[in-house]
Length: 108
Image (cartoon, rainbow, N blue to C red):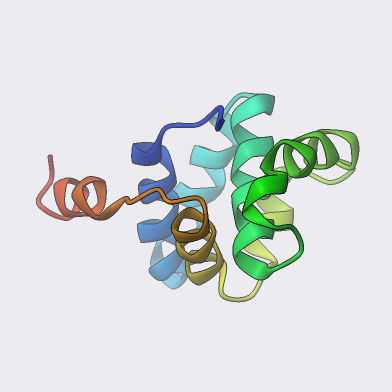
């Protein structure tokens, strides 16, 4: 379904919550993702924002790939409430990142 691990999405969520001090790190992290991972990340955000339904995740990924005209990091960092949209998108898809977030917070 997704071309990106929940662990990586959890990393983006946590860094997005601390954007004032983690923006450069988050930007570099997103830039290092593959095109497929970036498209999946955008698709999850779109589902969480309500632009796509969870069952349309494949269409969202295709749209993200087709419409990638600006750098993904710029697009995502310019999206208000990014971490909330990612969490909501994962919830809609039935995916939990709580364990991954806990591991990251503990330094795992």
